Length: 218
Length: 220
Image (cartoon, rainbow over all chains, first blue to last red; front, side, top):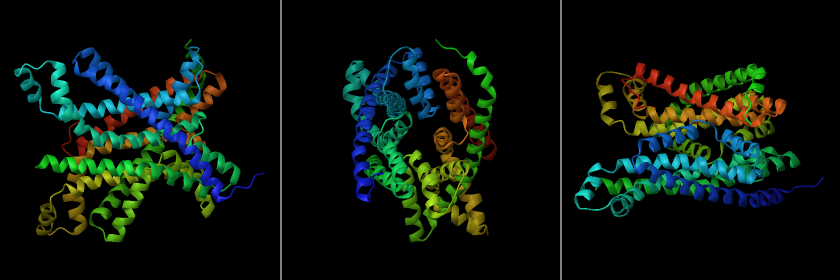
């Protein structure tokens, strides 16, 4: 049996934190890409597309992320695609993230007055011009704070990848717990590392929100 | 290809799991929201040390994954001599989680309540607790009711993780069934559908309660 000092525990946890960060970045980047496509599809105001996107959002917001991971993991292998825990987790988190982001962004775009679209049309701007010059610059400002706030949910969501066997921070924690029998210490460190990752983002999102709120009042 | 027929013999397992999930959700929602309201009041009106304590608790819970909180409660607390069964640990983790999130939500409702409400209560000769519950808390909750509903549903969905410490909930049933008949995808598909139905049902129930309590009308 190997003896683990506190230093060993922290070092191993920090090493596995790399995978938590990497998975979060992939999920967030993938989620943003898919959500951009879905948002663009929504803006076409096609009733069939809108309904499909609403169903997509409800599906991912109304089922546990854990189930989504299981379904990605077992679903793809059922149709003959061998998928690693890493890929399944990245896929599930990407879909999950996109569903929430598209809903957040919908709210942001809908807060812009309808008159903006009408005024742009009067000025003879095309749909793409209106979107690019009028709507997006305003929508991005509104969407920034809640999107950064949501990135915290993505980081926390990566913890569930441990359940399908991907060794990230939480999984490393359970493994160290099994080896050291010091659950209190191990999980306290795990929680602190997540906190160190998430809190700055939460704080930044809150600051942006306040700044924006003040800017709007004047 | 898909074969749901193999799941039929396990209907009982799914029903039992569903009942456990509903039971834990119900208990954690009621207790968690009560704690949330108390903590929100402490954070809004309490002395400085209490405000700081509640703030730290809320930020710690909101910035760590639920599964880590669950492991901490289940594996970590016995080190302090607090021995909990999986079911008790799961319930405690759910309550701690919902209490923190609902504190933040309810507090934002309280913060939006005009100070005049307090003064009006005092003028009418109501005591502090009467003013708080009848004049301040009810309108505050009415304002943030949709957010509160969503948070309770998120906690219900999060409870799927309890299966990891062997709480015999819906996800535990799904794991058990797929280990018996190797129909993993079908088993999880049915379970996901059950969670979705549960989420929709919860929203309906919250809407009905909202209509009784306030003149709340659902937007959906």
